[in-house]
Length: 225
Image (cartoon, rainbow, N blue to C red; front, side):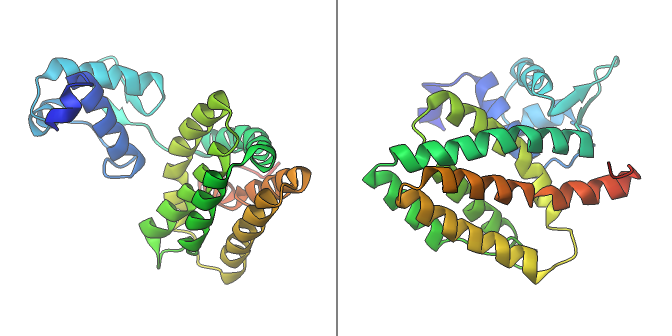
């Protein structure tokens, strides 16, 4: 912690800590943030915490009402679908670029990530989600496009809340097995430099993630369009 303070303000540290708690579900969607309690737990005054909250509000991760009551933003199918639509454009582009630009180090990182993959089910929980994220991160970082990497880092951060929600879906072997197989196929295509095929497979892979969105829409009573 002392080393971190050389580089980050207390506001930065509060922002990073709260953002992690929200994305990992430690602070559940819809829950109220007890600001003074949080400030005390983070060993800081209320001022840097409020600065962090303003940043989180600008990202849509918290909502602040007229009485300065702060809550973790609820999850909804509209945001989930919007995240999906953007990823459907960016992830295939990243896979295509990765197949063209991957280095030996990128390949080693990707293959190490593949070796740790697990079916994303309640049985494996957070371990599977972490491995799943690490694989996709290895893919898009191999694109060597800094703008694309920053955009996808943010998109994947926000999408992770919905992936955790997806663990609540009824277990089914076929979709989970298919996802796992596609990860292995995708790595092979990128390593072999087959850019167009990698992009096509990634597009199909992302499209399959509509399952969680459809479940949310069913829960909210939104008709399928």
